[in-house]
Image (cartoon, rainbow, N blue to C red; front, top):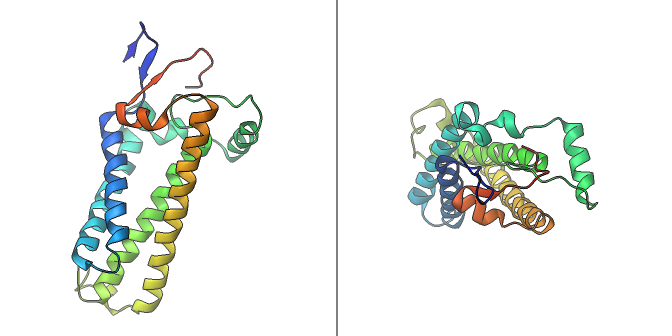
Length: 193
């Protein structure tokens, strides 16, 4: 999928991009409806779980840059990468860089925990798909606190993700937001694939 004329390479396929922006949308909807519209909030959470289920599967069988094995590096390699950001010698990656790879995993876990705990909490109130399950008997107090903790952790991670995108975009003089819209990046001689 390379265009050799202008050095453009397809990095993120349409499914990764739709997943990314749909997750942004549904998380935003869930976050802003948390106190007001239980049904909208719940359906946003169900949508998030569906998206995450797809992403986990696509991370195993998807296209090259979508696969987890392409962007999950050893902890030491990732620490070395983080140190290199402070120097002028940090490498540019075509797909996710090592820090971005761990951020993907952290966001998946945090957002999934938020949604699953939200489903459990909704069940204690008699709503949702788990309303008639054993979960409905749980105490809503700790569920509410833990659900809120993971929602706020997710917001913190999203902020760090956006900061990382900005730093990487400035450092490597590229627009990563545009890349997540178009799916393409300009190829450079020293890119790490």
